[in-house]
Length: 121
Image (cartoon, rainbow, N blue to C red; front, side):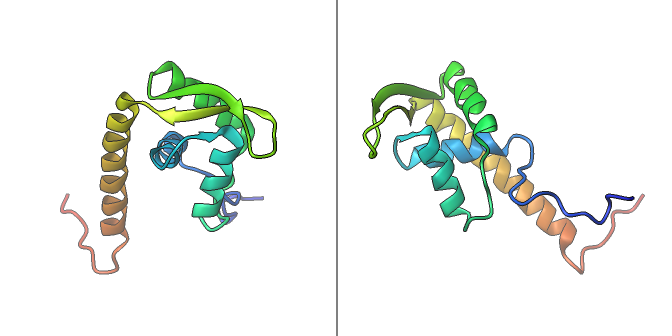
C-alpha cells in the first residue's frame, strides 16, 4: 500500500521546529516542561502535540547550548518541577531562528502561489 496519500500524523513537526517553538514559549516567560508542551498545544489550536519523549531531550539540548537555563521549583499542582527560562544567548538565537522560519514560510508561500512562474532552466 502506498503512503503517498496518507497525511502526516496530527501535530508532526518539521525537523528543527521544536527548538524554535520552545524558544518562542520561553520568550513569553518561564515554564516547566509540561507547561511548555501545553502552551504549544494551546497556541496552535490543539494542532501541535509535543511528545514528552521529544520535549525533554530538546530542553536538555537547548540548556547545554546555553540558550535556556533551568531551576527547580514547585508547579501549580504542588509538585517539584524544573522551570526553564530564556537566557540572553537564547533571546539572540530565537531572533535568528524566527528570521529563518519567516524566510522559509515566505519561500514556500511563493512556490504555492497559483500564479507563480516556473523558473527557466
